[in-house]
Image (tube, rainbow over all chains, first blue to last red; front, side, top):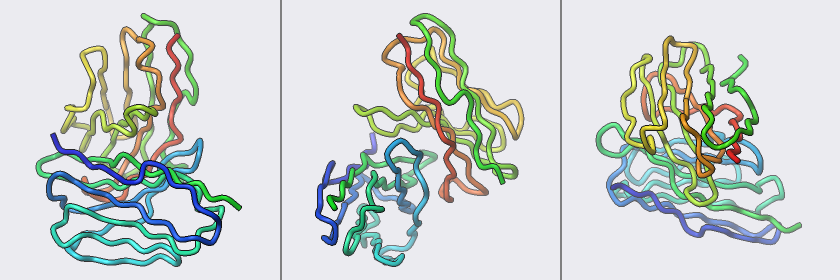
Length: 110
Length: 114
């Protein structure tokens, strides 16, 4: 079946360092969404990318959708303690299925 | 807007008991999703509805799990009989107009089966 994997699974960074998580699908996705889940909380939508090669920015966050629409990345510049949480990618594959990635847990050390 | 509402927030039950989780989606949203989250398996989509009709239930683990959506403002996820391996956080989410639109998650129900 279709799988959406994210790497790394865990990442510890010093506050101020950059962070990147990568999302890879075994098949082509119609779109890619990114969600953030704070510890003890629920996933919260960050952004959606639809077009091949699309790049979007939200302040210190940069999101990219691959040319083949099978991979995506989220880059955070100069991390802050408020960035702590787990970042999930998600997307619609062929048919009616919708998949969440395995998630990357980010810890920011003050 | 109150957002997606789930109840109960916490449930502790004994193996073999029936468990019913409840969800009220955001008014006007026509897609409703049920997810299960565990450390081992991450966030899994169990089932989703469009206009109260189940569209894809391929993620439902087995016959012990069932979900209904009798109207646009209410859905239930039932586990009967429950087992310890069902212990997880169950999230309900809703979205508007398309499968690939932004999903709004509820606070979740933390289920513990002893």
